[in-house]
Length: 537
Image (cartoon, rainbow, N blue to C red; front, side, top):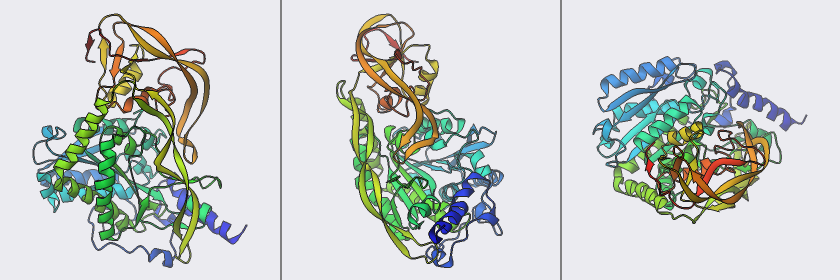
């Protein structure tokens, strides 16, 4: 084995293996002095539980709840509630900060900023930053922002994973691949908060692997402090893309530059596959970042340099999240009218799209060549590497279909109907029989396999149905009790994601709707809104 391969093997064990087991301080990777000196502590002192004197691990569940309970007693503008029990029975708290009454949050009077920490249990810096921000909003220097903005914080989106210091939820599901199916109580709770409070800006806080796959592929450690990416998903409303590109991302970059936080687009790779490209974040809808965009929020992912480092540079990692969140809060408070106008315009754009207009069913990232700068693990010097890059900023459309007026599901598909309602979609029940023009999906071929992303198979998302389908014109007999889901609603961009069968994040691919080769799917596309009486759910 070569010297480089020996180094890679050692670093892969040290930097990558910690995601598989509970955090043990003595097993944490120790950077070389030359690498470590590139990441000095920020000029602030944090006092949340992870920074207690002598602390050797991260904030525990009991420490988090004690901190939040104590804060609630001295923060009159903060409401603390338990929005879910985790799969192993741990409390999952949410915090709402408002000067104007919780019942007014999300009613369009002020922008709502939503912050989510620690969906992945082995990524603690975002969760700790949520505690810092909660204290500053509830009883500190950020309280004046609540004159113009309301804030919703989920400090820890994965209590069980945090307890075990592992990425996944207790049942093995990756929480950040469950935002369309909503199979888990933790992610259902986040979706319910989204529906209730209608955030205008979302910041989802994670951490990325520093060595592991990167050492194997490039011989270097990731150099930057933070990776960022806004919603990059087909059918995103133009108003959202405009404000995120022209206002929100520039504000974030300005804040990072002022604070000395280095950054680039989010990217990842498969270190075990030498041919795997370096890919930006997914264009699939099942991540928190992308589903929020389809829910008409300006949505940002921030990942900091942390997975595999143990407690090394924890203050710097937390600080990067705090800087980003403060930038979003300040922007919303300074430009509340612009933020609200953009998200309401996005809703109107979605509703106004006429039946027959093409929408994107599937797409793929565009390949490029790009140079990235890593750092040598021993010397700490820059190492420039040219990589095959998959961009999510410019997608290639691979399948479009004309937009229907709506979809119809039979009442027997209750699980599918409930999944749509959990996302906040409006459904209506057919009150009397009617024949309408529509289209059925004929199942031509069925295969099973892993969901795919730019790196290859995304095995962490589970096995899906990969079918091929043919649309057939048909006269459709609607029956009383059938459920109609119209595209004349603000969340309509979620419908092709959920109901077009080629969508990897949809109900057919994920076997919520039955798929039988040679048969037809239960879901029907119809070209005009039914004349029959329609009632609410």
